[in-house]
Every structure is written in structure tokens, then in C-alpha cells.
Length: 450
Image 1 (tube, rainbow, N blue to C red):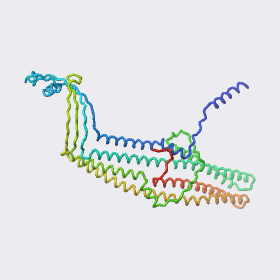
Image 2 (cartoon, rainbow, N blue to C red):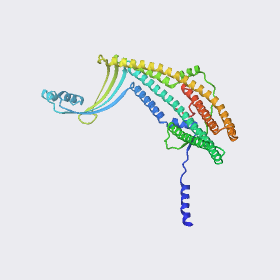
Image 3 (cartoon, one colour):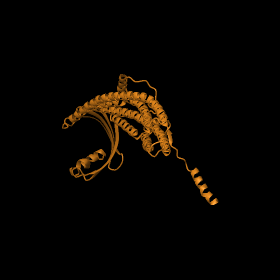
Image 4 (cartoon, helix red, strand yellow):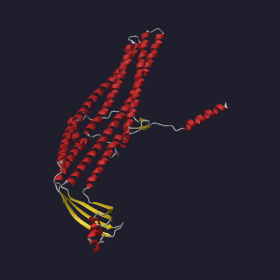
């Protein structure tokens, strides 16, 4: 009827007019590039590096001339100020030397504009040492940022592989559910025909429920893995994404030598080089603190304009050199030197501790990678054996030569073997990246320069 067709047509039109929201698909390299550009933790480290660069510019500017202008207005009845104002404005007359007028000058108004140039000539090494400290601190921040980029690449790689693994695990769980459903249907049919006991039917149903529960856990792990990848990539959690790959593939690579890996790590780890730079910065701060006991020399040139109202009528200039030496500061300078020496000592110990930690990272990565290789070699063969065992046990069960429990156990062993092969494959790929991260040799995608 027409009145029923119209609403249906409108609904169809609305559905076809509505935009279809599709999940954004990323391959591994795209996920890594996006993470390097949008990961908030990495962007925070980048901002720290930019701040260190700005502080270096500040330290460098302290060695350059300082040019400034000032304007002041003053009203005073102080006799000295009043007479000085007349001198500065070049308005002294003979009556101004009258003692009564000198002692009681009244209120004098003065407007002064000054242009001043100050140049540090010598600071005992304080300015140059402060600049070295700032440069080494900037180097530390830059190296830490580069290390943070490597860590972000590793995290994105690991999260991407974890999502792929979760999806593969869900496929394994789906296969297990299909097998359990088939067994439940078969035993139910056999029970109705009186060809098997009721306990077999109940056992199959319990097994199906357990397998279905395991599948729900697999679904949750997929969503957890997807959210973790979004966090690393710097995406909103409500942004829908899918990996472009379907499974975790193994990259062919030769086994690394432990001694060579430790050598590469000592030379290539950015965080180790950053700590050494921080030690150099602390050493420079010691020199800057010691400069407090040395004299400083400054050159100062000023150009002044004085008037009893805003203006530039009376001009005068002055040039001077100032030599200053701090003779006593209540022990403050000694305290600053002691603190700087302690900080230098601290950085040296931290560098030594980090070097040992780096070596430990490399050794742990080697051990984990070796274990993953061995597990994968074993589990890959075991999957085929478990699959064949299911086929043989299923045949015997169909012939009435074994019990249902044996078949269900064979199915569980096959599922466990597939999961172990998947886990070892993921651990192998993550382990390779972890070793490169420990060595400081993890490659970054092309076109992702800092």
C-alpha cells in the first residue's frame, strides 16, 4: 500500500544519504610514522629539548653587549638633587649660589632619558663556563629526545604486533568454538539415538561453554590491543583503526653476537651519551662557580638627556670601565662550588651505573631472543603434530575406539599449540626490536627526521 511504501522509502533515503564511517587502516610503518608525529609523551620530550635550546641562546646572549633605554621623572626638594638638576639641565645662574637658595631650593622637577650600553669584558670564565654548561645540557635534551623517538618506534611496533597477535588469537578461538560446537551437536545427536551416554553430551556442552568463554577473553584482548595502539599513536580512543596486516610475519635476520651488541650499545645508546653530556655540563658549572672568586670587568657607555619637562634639550655622555671583585659573601660561593662538585660526582656515578644497565639490557634482550627462537622452532613443529593428533583421535572416536574426553583433550592441545606458536612468533619479532633498542640501533622510518 502507498502509505506504507513512503516511510520505507524515506528510511532508505536517509540510510543511503548518511555518511558511512569506516575504520582507518594503518600498516606498521604508517603506525610508527603517526606515533612519531603525534605521541604526546614524545611531543613533551621534544618541548623539553626546545626549552634547552632556548636556554643555550640565553647563555650565549649573556656574553654580548646589552643595550637598553630608560625614562624617569622625579620631583624632589632635596638640596643636592635640586642643584644637580640645574647642572644636568645646564640652567645654573649666579643667584643659584645664594646660600639661602642652596639650602632651601624648593621642589625641582627632572625628566631623564638614558641610553646605556654595557659590555662584559672579563668575567673570570663564568660566562663561558655557563655557556658550555647550557650547550651540554642542550645536547643532553636533544639526545634524550632521540632516545625517546627510538622508544616510541619500539612501542608502536610492539603495540601493532600485539594487536595482530590478538586478532590471530581470536581466529584460533573461533576455530576452537566451531570444533566445540560440532562436538556438542554430534554428542547431542548420538545421545538422542542412544548411541552414547548422557555424560558425553554434558561433557561436550561444558567444553563448549569453556571455549566460548575463552573466545570472549580473546575479543577483549583485541579491543585492549587496539586501544593500546591508539595510545602509542596519539589517537583518540574513540577513533576506529584496523591494522593492514593479517598476521605476524617473521623477519629473517642473523643471530647477533653478544660482545658486538654490547660494543654497539656503548657507542650508540643515546641515553648513555646524554648522561655523559650531563656530566660535562656539571663540570662546566664547577668552573662557573669558581669564577666568583675572580674579578670581573665591564665596559659601560651612556647617553643622557635631562630636562625640567619631557624633552631632549640637555645631552651628556659618559664612558667608564668597572672592575669588581667580591671579597666576602658569607660562604655562599664556597657552598656553590661544593654543590657543583657534588653534582659532577653524581653525574659520573650515574653514567657508570647507566653503562652497566645498558649492558644488562643487551644481555637480557639476547636471552629473551634466544628463548623466543627456541620456543618458536619447537612450537611450529608441535602445531602440525597436534593437528594430526586431532585427526587421528577424531577418527578413533568415530569408530568407537576412544572416549570423548580424549578427543576434547586433543582439541585443547591443538589450540594450545597454535597459541604457543603465535606467542613465540610475536616474542621473536618483539625480541628482535628489543635487541635493537637495547643496542641503540633501532631504525626509524625514512622521512622521519627530528
